Image (tube, one colour):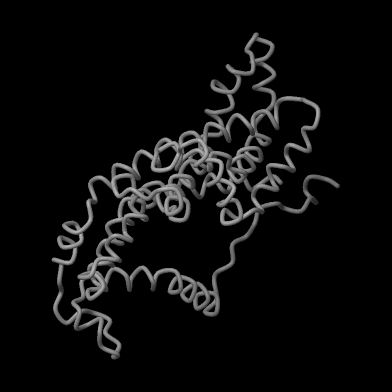
Length: 285
């Protein structure tokens, strides 16, 4: 087939119909409405929340809910704990995912396919299933109420390894072959060639893990019992269980908004890199 008769590969974008806009609007509302309700509820008093009538906006705005929440829960200590767990846990997860994905793409060893299928299998197992054996293992090592006890069980991330493997497979192998001919070993090729070229996908894996570590509730609930070692989602239960907060739902919502604000700010600043990373990793299966 001549070049002039070859079908064009350029995708033509067609304008959206009214039905398309309605579907998109419905999807946006489903996602945004709970968040909007939580923010509005954080400014409501007990009277607005106790009534059976639909009250969208508070009759009297009560920003003091935020100061009251900050007084009842040691948010400074909780932010510190969550920050340490998030930075260290997400950093180690990304490092392990990079090393594993590099080995699966650029190294040959017996049982390579079985290792890859094993990585995929870990993505099918929900964390609730592994919570009990993880608790027996970590508590047996004395990891209760410790930072490493929170971080260690979640270090293996099948999703990050899979996404980076797909991204590494799209890299130009000519560059790596040239580096190999110049005498570069695996370590130099990884950090000087592969990592710089796959930065969008690595940033995506990092952000996904940051969000997961910041919001994780189940594992800290199991392994942490001391208030000074609680992370933010775990520490919110202190606010929920206090007698005054039980009668003031707005204070609890204010505390929840304070927990979500940092991660929403990170997502708003870096969401373009997340989209680019998912696109780069998903082009080639």
